[in-house]
Image 1 (cartoon, rainbow, N blue to C red):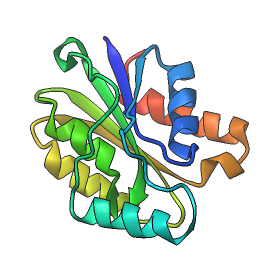
Image 2 (image 1 turned 90 degrees about the vertical axis):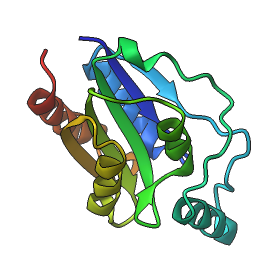
Image 3 (image 1 turned 30 degrees about the vertical axis):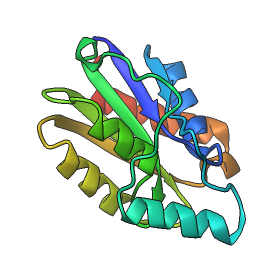
Image 4 (image 1 turned 135 degrees about the vertical axis):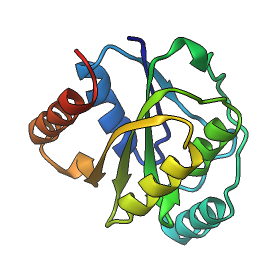
Length: 161
């Protein structure tokens, strides 16, 4: 089985989780990088990021998206912004034909709405089989060993070794 981890990370939380998943699962890693980044701090971060998420903007990405047809499992990671997934993930979904795949979602957040985010991703990718979801509240502030064990347990329930 060929695996792909696709993620967007503004502050590093989602990248932290993606790297742990990659250390457990043999997978290709695709970090979505928008040409124009949202500010990382302050009021503008919430204003621009929230507006972009609510209006389902699709920012242009710097990097090339690989052929998805060669992957069996796709694990998608996103921060939760305004109860939904980040705009670069929206770009990935809009410009990639993802059908008949096994998919899983992980999300990082500051306080919730992961279920709402996962529901939106599931609806957007309804022609696929959702293997599972997992979320983390500000994981870079947690013990890496604890987080790794949690991810290992999750991976063992969703992917064949």
